[in-house]
Amino acid sequence: MVWLDTLVQGILLGGVYALFALGLSLIFGVMRLVNLAHGDLIVLAAFIVFVVMTSFGVSLAAAAVLTIALMFAIGFLLQRLVLERVLGDDIMPPLLVTFGLSVVIQNGLLLGFGADSRRLQAGAFETLSVDILPGLSIGVAPLSALMIAVGVIVLLQIVFYRTSLGRAFRATSDDPQIAQLMGIDQRNVYAIAVGISLAVSVIAAVAFGMRANFDPSIGPARLLYAFEAVIIGGLGSLWGTLIGGMVLGVAQTVGARIDPEWQILAGHLAFLVMLFIRPRGLFPARQP
Amino acid sequence: MSALLSVERLDAFYGSFQALFGIDFSLHTGESVAVIGANGAGKSTFLKSLAGLVKNRRDAIRFLDQDVGDRGAPEMLRMGLALVPEGRRLFPSLSVEENLLVGAYSGLRPQPWNLQKIYELFPVLRERRSSPSTVLSGGQQQMVAIGRALMSNPKVLLCDELSLGLAPIVIEDIYRALPRVKASGTSVVIVEQDIARAMRSVDRFYCLQEGRVTLAGEPGTVDQGDIRRAYFGT
Figure (cartoon, rainbow over the protein chains, first blue to last red):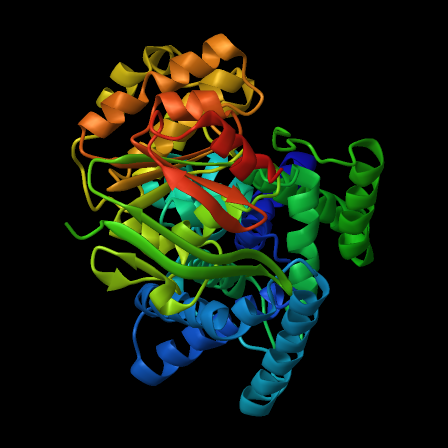
């Protein structure tokens, strides 16, 4: 029963890691941009939610909705005003710019909020649990995080495969020049993609900020988990990313069960083993 | 009658390389025009200039009574000018039908071309609608490329090397669609290396050589020897 519990906790944790990874995966898929500031943007979103909650006294859900709108706008402008200028054939400039952005966000948050840990308070919701088997209960909050991750993936899949915007995303990813001939303005398509990515980051931030403490310095580690989830799952597959997050989550909880010091290491080891046996991930996108 | 699309003294550059020198060109509503010329004569550059993929002097190109030489491709498409690019260039991760639908992305003019009409024009595409565009034959891919451009219901359709790499019988299938495109009110510009094929389907032609117009006229009224000289420069 202990091991079943460990497995279930790992899967639930995987939902949070998948949420970290979805935004990263989306931007890479549409514009081949590796956003090194992704982890810090998640932390930024967590702080914004925190500030909105404490200064306006609204609920976590209301603050999250407000922050989603705000982060979409920030993402849109970030692309139009900054990233757009460095996107090109050379992959180095966007890497450097997002790396710089990561440093700026971390230090900006440190300046504004200090190094203290925070947590997003969800009241009684945090401690609610349901018994699914005798002796095995699941926290409602982590369960909702996983269900929200699934919901976000379903929503992104619908956007990608059932809408005109999704066709524009995929067409631009295939061939930006020909996409322009279809009347698709790639500057707006990219800006919307970054906006959606940051909107999803807010959901990741809320799911994470409810279950663990955060402070300005933890962004890069979230980025690493996000990367690992994407790679384990296979580039270009959102459902793969969810499974990748779960593999990572289960490895971490199993590691922690053996010895608490092993939690992080076990996750990275699982990633390395996966890289060794399936270098293209569990569900790599079909090669054209 | 003022021209739908007119070009005056168009010079086009790729970086520091000049590909076109002082091109003059006009296209009227309902007309079909061929641009012929040897490899490297500047035909594709000319179409790319019209489509906004190569930017030029603002007043070099006039379309719908506006100076549009410096506008980008998305804007030109929205104004009603669509290009079927050389080599078809379908989107590999989109199905046949999605390739067609992405052509209607701007959604400004829903008539007369829609999915239904494209499938009537090229019935084989209806059977292949769910296939990835990559598994189609060359001719079928060309049909998708034409259909994709028509889905924006352009006033002007630019076709770059429709016959490239296709069997003669397939080329005839493709060209059979052009009269129906014209009948729908769309003016057509075709770029071809195959002079005879091009001349059979158009009202007028321009011949380019090394970035300059060397001859223009109507097929049938121009001497074959003149065309050969304009084409090869001998």
